[in-house]
Length: 315
Image (tube, rainbow, N blue to C red):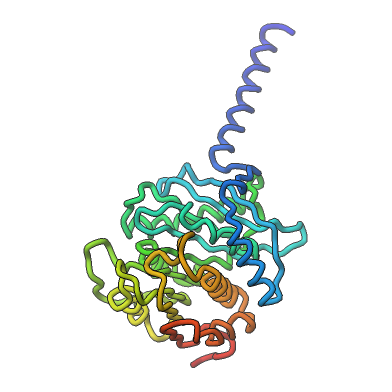
């Protein structure tokens, strides 16, 4: 082989290596880190929910991506292992609370992915990111999962139904989810604030959330001393326009960290969030009837205008 051919071959191989490294930077293709992030209680709760609703139970996997974007540090995606003939799945993008990390909420991943809902948990750029930054991260997270869906090298390729996307957040991330919902409008099918903190730290809630037209499920606890419901969750619920489908569920106990790995009532939270998402993704009455009041005795406070449920049209 002459020198010119050797140089051409070397350049070609270097080009291939560059392309491969670039693709790797955009997605962690087929890398399964479930062993470190797969909390068994989430799987157990999913199995119980699948049995309750007579739904299919999937194997679930997880990988990390999104390190190239400015709005967050990365995103951990939990997804169901589906077959080639399975229909695409809905998804929820989640923001952690102030000083929270994705690992704090790992049980949500196997819980929802095991019953067919792709779950993307954001790692914020810093644990102290404010409400506005978390709002922008949620919006960017939606674009990320769409990018993953379109990327043939991604584990998520062609698995996402882009018409079935919701957002969720805890604490400051919960407040951010409502602000993101105001901007996203009909682009999403649901928003789930978990013990939400109303506004930027140190500020009080002013104005209203009349711009939220997305079906909303707010979960709170009566004994939350960090974001007391009267000035946070309940106030946010009441400020959402009455024409918007909304549900308020308040546990008697559990405190501000009830949605985290070490929180209480995890199975109940998972079951209700799953049913709420599926009700709004599919319109199936078996989910909407459950959210519409079948389990309200489990809560110290429960309220819904039932507008989003097929059982209660046009009320």
